[in-house]
Length: 176
Image (cartoon, helix red, strand yellow):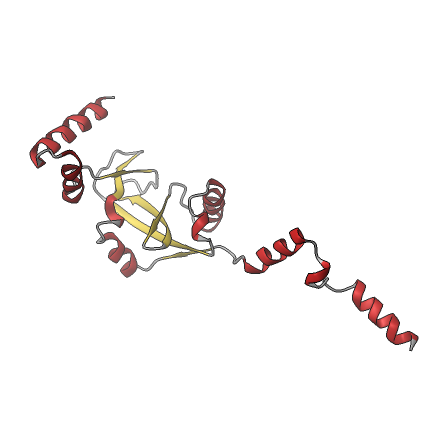
């Protein structure tokens, strides 16, 4: 009989406490630990990349210039999907920095752009076709016809006036 009692007390002191024995904060920590998934980064296939690049919404932010050689047209793209991050955390600085660190450990690419598209958390990177640098500047195509149509709705100006204004602004920014 003493052995049975000893075994029960031994088991009780050397096992995880049951939920009733945990404080409220400990229960929350246990729930969070059991719910959190490891963050995984996976490179998309060429087919998936090409499909994304033909999507107008995804392609609005795109590579425009290599910081090293000045190339403005020839870029190859590598796109990765991030899994295991709650959607509510996508825009948090801490989350993005953690993903950048993990990404650098897995891939030799320093310059990346984090974006969401259709509920997916993606990492976009470009490689210069001339010098093979990944130090690429991304920007929105101001002369995109869909963008111009949106500006036209908001301002009531003609398409021609909008294009002239965009060119003037673009030229002024390039000088500075």
